[in-house]
Length: 297
Ligand SMILES: Nc1nc(=O)c2c([nH]1)NC[C@@H]1CN(c3ccc(C(=O)N[C@@H](CCC(=O)O)C(=O)O)cc3)C=[N+]21
Image (cartoon, rainbow, N blue to C red; front, top):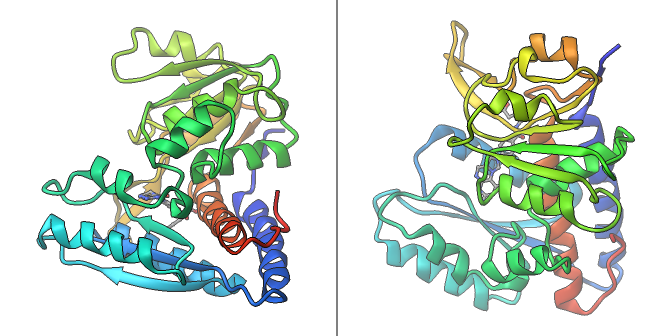
């Protein structure tokens, strides 16, 4: 039987740990605060940001909610970041990606105070991650590590194949797989849009992470028997329902499930874990900034 890895359940466990850590910080009069910054009219981005705020409320993290017009000057966003950097009440800053084309997203990530960069995307934090000295692990790859751990999937000595080389997922995921220690020590291949004979690579995977952002591009014929399949895709495709769309992954679930020993669904797989690890990073940020020990490792 193929195991369906339940991201909602594992995320609930993480939120429980986070909530306990928030209670412990309260004894030192510390309340973690996350600022979310949204500069987009995209309904999906709006939904994700409001989900992140609801998650915070559930575990006792305060939020600051900044929304900028998508056609505002880029300077408004840079100024907002400067203000949040200077605000001692704010422990974590998340600028929802993507930002509009007229904004330099690399400058955005560079300007967030690295200690408040709970997304783990500042060059200093990426550098530390690659050096094996991570401060905040980027939320999606970190969440995937937790999912693999929860499903008791060994990575050591295994073939890990990551499809996609994004800043948010593919690059940090591959880096975590090659690190020493638990959740690492995997022989790692990164595939992308220029890879020749993708299927030959993906079929070799013991652990396959699909993070290319192309709906259902990985089907059963591309998966080796018994592989563990982690689907990072959250693609909206038109559908004949109330919302007018449905979410599909980068993996064709039905055919992939025939081959895999374990697989994450979409929705209910990686997505909830990404949000849970943001809470985790925010609590650790609050602890570090207030000089209190965090109950989270
Ligand atoms: N600075 C930044 N950090 C991010 O972490 C970031 C970002 N920008 N931009 C966009 C992506 C996307 N992302 C998601 C997180 C959770 C779900 C999620 O919880 N999805 C639910 C379903 C949601 C639904 O029903 O629509 C699930 O898969 O079960 C989705 C998408 C974070 N991202």
